[in-house]
Image (cartoon, rainbow, N blue to C red; front, top):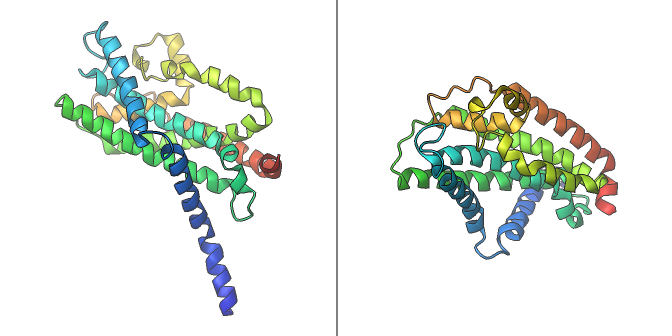
Length: 265
């Protein structure tokens, strides 16, 4: 192999990681670098949501459905839900956001998707660590954490968010009305995902609805990791991964077939 061929091979080999790194830095600067406070808002948003829910339910109920601390109860439900929905929303708009860069041959839509998933994952993990650590410090709590369940919840949330995001990435482009419809449909999603109302305490007809909502399983897996007595036997990782992979397969297929139209229109 000649020196020129070797150099070209190395350049091709490292093109993907370099492109993703550049897109990741661009995402960080545009998402958090231009707004006052930057990452502060990413942390303040879940804290505000958890605080509002905790105060509201503390006025009505003496203790949460799990444990004795309302902020921890809502944090273990809201944070995994936020992880999955944030990834789904960011991936769904990644081609629209990076369309000018995708016109270059060396930048693929898969690079843009991977960059957005990576940034969202890093941000939400950082937010989760800070929020949960703060709750334990402020309220002097001691939790027996099952790291396996926590990691499973994170992986399930990432896969579900990516799958829904990839499919919506095409649907938002081809059916603009679907983007508005999706926003309307998902607004009450937290209410039927076990974030506020625990699955186990709901009537049977509500359980039948909640079980088919994959977010319910992601939330329950995280709560299992922080509450040793919470078995959550209804969790089905197979169902969540099935929904994620089906959405991902159809989404990538549609993006592959309509890539040029989406980038140049």
